[in-house]
Length: 346
Ligand SMILES: Nc1ncnc2c1ncn2[C@@H]1O[C@H](COP(=O)(O)OP(=O)(O)OP(=O)(O)O)[C@@H](O)[C@H]1O
Ligand code: SF4
Ligand SMILES: [Mg+2]
Image (cartoon, rainbow, N blue to C red; front, side, top):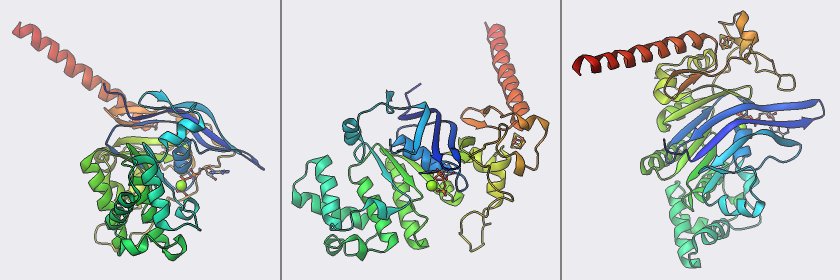
């Protein structure tokens, strides 16, 4: 098996607050392969951004990574020095943040900010970097890119700043791009343009993308695989087909049910499933979805492990246990009948 580009193992992240310890991420494991587009979905507060920031080594006090492992090309990311990180961040691994204003310098022209990044990582001349910056702005749908380069962030709308951030993140052709809600603040036309850009990235398959979003519609359009987060844990993981056509976890089903149907105009954020997410200051010991799950039974007071449903498709729900056992039996019977066939023909 080839080594994944990025691997996250049993990650735990918490924040010390006045009211106690907020256990934002409570044992998350997943991987991203080179060139693939992984969707990370889940309601507000499920731990998506915190997971992304942990990967980028951007968890600072009062937050801490209390345990877990993060590796990139098999090398430990959690114990890199800041100097080593500076070589990776914005170069081989880039991130687009949920709030673009925090990552642009308000007193520097957009062009200078862009060319600085481009020159640092690609060693181009000033003129070449300027050309490249204009090309990138055009690619993310900003009209008159050359004039725009001379302007300051406050002269851009929120959606345009978000697009500038995407352009900057792509400027050094990273191996891994983590995009946190990159299209939420954008109007529908621009959103479509950005999604096309992500599709193009997927087709080129040089850049792996972790796309964090509330919008399952976006995931269906651009992702190959999906993880569904809830209460700081991964509830279900699978290919886009698994998640949309063969969802197993009651939480995934709830998310899918709250999607606007074909033909309906609304492309709003998902309507939350009835009830509210668990209190992460005092997380439940059992299944975190228990209080809202229409199928909850006694066993659910215990936290279920992730059951394998088929290769790459896992669900953290006790209801998946029998299906997973059945699947195993099916596999065993198939492989043993295969062996018998060998004997007969031999
Ligand atoms: N700096 C912080 N201090 C304290 N708690 C934090 C901090 N950052 C995140 N958290 C908590 O961690 C939990 C997970 O937050 P996170 O931002 O990862 O959610 P999310 O899934 O990205 O949600 P959204 O969809 O709203 O962006 C939340 O309970 C949040 O309050
Ligand atoms: S483990 Fe139980 S409570 Fe949790 S999703 Fe499955 S059936 Fe519902
Ligand atoms: Mg977030």
